[in-house]
Image 1: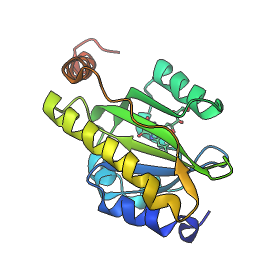
Image 2: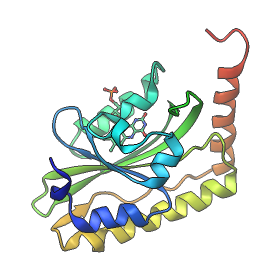
Image 3: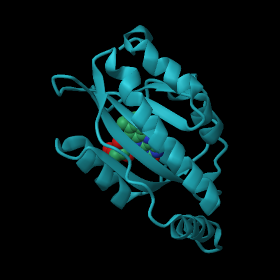
Amino acid sequence: MHRQDIPAELQRYFEASNIALALADITEDNPLLLVNEPFRALTGYEDKDVLGRNCRMLQRDAANEQPRAKIRAFLEGGRQASVRTTILNFRKDGRPFVNLLYMSKLKSLSGEVRFLFASQFDVSRSQPELLSAYDAELGQTISRLGPALAESGIVIEGSLMTIANSLATVAQAKLTLADLDAPGFP
Ligand SMILES: Cc1cc2nc3c(=O)[nH]c(=O)nc-3n(C[C@H](O)[C@H](O)[C@H](O)COP(=O)(O)O)c2cc1C
């Protein structure tokens, strides 16, 4: 898949967004096709480091068994419209962060999956208010992406299940990072 095969509205939308967004191909192992500036700022990676690769590279050696199983169930199952999970990731400089990952599918009008869409947020270095603001922005992005893509005959599956308890989510993510830093961690 070449960049020119990605609908122009989608590319413009990615460039204009303030939140980290990523788009992947539906072919074998879902290579990344497009990421935006907030994604680059969050992860420290540039386009040349990530495009064409699977986004699991952000996990390095972390086991992440539960979140990965949740993501795989979403990718392999036909019914689930979207998935949301925290997952341990690392920036290019090696600094770990807990990524609150949202994923959904972009489909053609006939129901065929065309692209995989995702958004990332560092919940471990956030505050509950920032998480709520991100949640609101992601919700808006998803609801506005629909009309923006209609011209290209693409629909976004699923709406956003907002984070019910941002205080607890942020606190849990901070604990996860603190555990990583604790002496004696293997
Ligand atoms: C568009 C897209 C964006 C993704 N973004 C991330 C991400 O930011 N961090 C992450 O750990 N995994 C991300 N993933 C999930 C991994 O690529 C992979 O699907 C997941 O680790 C489950 O597969 P695995 O168990 O084979 O690794 C993303 C996947 C897609 C399709």
